Length: 267
Image 1 (cartoon, rainbow, N blue to C red):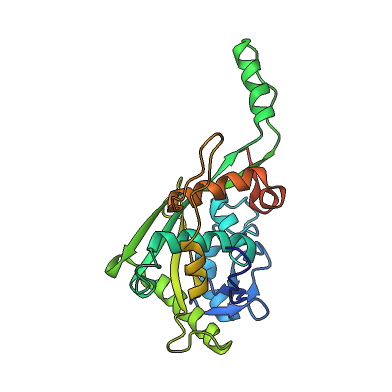
Image 2: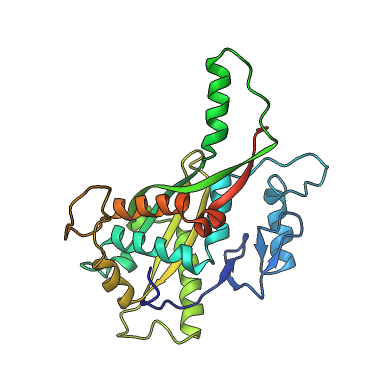
């Protein structure tokens, strides 16, 4: 989302056990994985029987199963205003908030995600080995993979998980404390969730503040032109914005840095 549509600055974490919304300053992060956060020692203790199977600091010393890398990136970028601003635009388009602002309260958005190996030089080298009948050299222990968005779906009614609604309510509470969401302001909070394309039970819930100015700006975005395409007044679709996000992740160095994760080749 361009900077002309100013968004509330809201950096928060969710208690991994009770789902309470906390600020970055008050949440207590797990000392083992530095990813899961808790509002209290009691919640951390209660969640340990589940968390210990994926925490880097497994109690018996055995390696913990790796969490889905796409969801790891999704968790990392949730407080990055630049990256999430582009995702806001996708959510606004998916819900058609320009024509149906009420959907911010009645619907939710599901975004599928994945990570892809984008080192084309290494891939080309390995292919040449295979084509010549030779065994390619061993892969390094870890390789960089890039976060990409797949498809978007819209949920409504009972299809929306209760925990996602709980997350949104916590976000609203924090926003109201900052002076947002006043009656008649047109401001809202949308519910959204990431789902891994490779393990659909792996999800990450989040909620985003949406202002009327953001909706107006997103509604005016034009369809990105491809090479040799004539100028057009056609408006950008949800799919156009996803493609723009994914291409930007590849071509823009700063975006590529934020959206890259090192993934083990041993699993």
